[in-house]
Image (cartoon, rainbow, N blue to C red; front, side, top):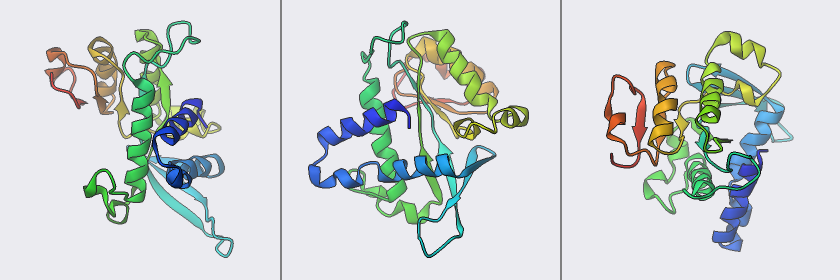
Length: 219
């Protein structure tokens, strides 16, 4: 399990009542185990996960349709040893993990519209974090690697690595405007949506150059 995913768990444990700890990120932890022990097959922009049934009386496999949303952000500085949290990356990843947990379990405690959505929506959501180290080159390498996973030849080369088999539904990140312009040029050209929570430049309104870029903050 990725160290930042574990950190997200710890952050959530600090703010959630102790009585709720047993349920915190339960679905994401379960999906992580399914990915370790099962098989993943990309279909379009989603992943079909085949895993063993946890019920001892049932030996059949369980099929899960997974929407993988990798999170690109600066978690450390250029030397990769000094933590960096100037823009709330760690808290953002914790919030993203909690949001996915509520989507996966139909928990409407914070957003009432999510109540029971797991019974109406067949998708499950999963994430992982990628440290850009405040470097455009590092962010671009991550984007190229993630979008290469849609290529059949690349998938064959990485069959032995479970995490490499996951194709992204969309990419979350990768920080401010300049970095997002560089990365979204590639992600858009390769047919993968990218969504930023920090990029505010009006240049990103160019739908021809950044055709699949979106943001949750005004320009």
